[in-house]
Each structure stands twice: as C-alpha cells, then as structure tokens.
Image (cartoon, rainbow, N blue to C red; front, side):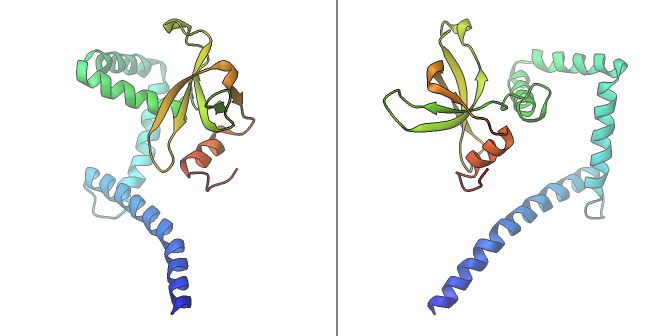
Length: 180
C-alpha cells in the first residue's frame, strides 16, 4: 500500500501544475471569447492578439500619440480612477514597459551584524527627495504571491547581483524552487 501512495503523490505532483496552468489558460480564453461573443473556443483569443497589436501600432503613430496622452491625462485627473489607473500602469511598466523597474537585482543585508540576506530589486537609487540621501528603495517580491514589500535600507547594505532580472524574479516567486 505504501508504494501505491508514493505513486499517487508522484502523479499528483506531476499533474497539478499542468492542470492548474491549463485551467487558468482556459479561463482567460473563455473570458475573451465571452467578451467577443463567439461560439468557437479560442477564436476570441485569436482575435485579441491582432487587435491588441493593431492598437499598439496606432498608439505608436504620431497622430494617435496625442489621443493616448489625452486619455492618460484624463484618467490621471479623476480622483478614484487615477489611483487604480496609475497603480496598474506603473505595475505593467515595471515589468514590460520601456521604463522597467525590476531590472536591478540585489542582495540586502537585513542588518550589518547579520548574515541573513533578502533578494530584491532596486527601484530608487536615492531617496534624497524625502531626506534620506544615504538610503535606497528595494522591492522585495513575495513567493507564490503577487505582492511584496518595499524596504528602505542604507546603500552599504545592498549588494548588486550579476544575474538576469527575470531569472531572479522566477527564483523569488517560486520560493527558491526554480533555479537560475
């Protein structure tokens, strides 16, 4: 019976990430299909790819750039909308925009006497604007979660890592399970 239990858990460990990934993809595709009101599974998703690409092209043109700036300013003026819009815009830009923020992985000593370190990303080199010129802002993502903490530490406690930032983020988010 012990060997059957072992096989069961091996199968569970193999199948769970596959099934969860496929289920999430199914939810995304079916949601997009519902938005477009199509009955052929996946067609809405296939329509979305060229549509988003076309919008990206339009926003990149000289004429549409003004309209994009107008919409941006409009959303940034509305009190509640501004908070949601700017937070989402900054988050998206931090990962994939031209102004990527999570591109400088570092190790942070928690305290000078400790050997415990945290892996994070420098988001601000200087905090002089708030009277802390000798400190920097480091974002510490949480494992298995889309959250994190921003910590302020003295610059001498920050050690740059010479590793691709995407690999470091994968390492952190996976709880150290996925290696470099």
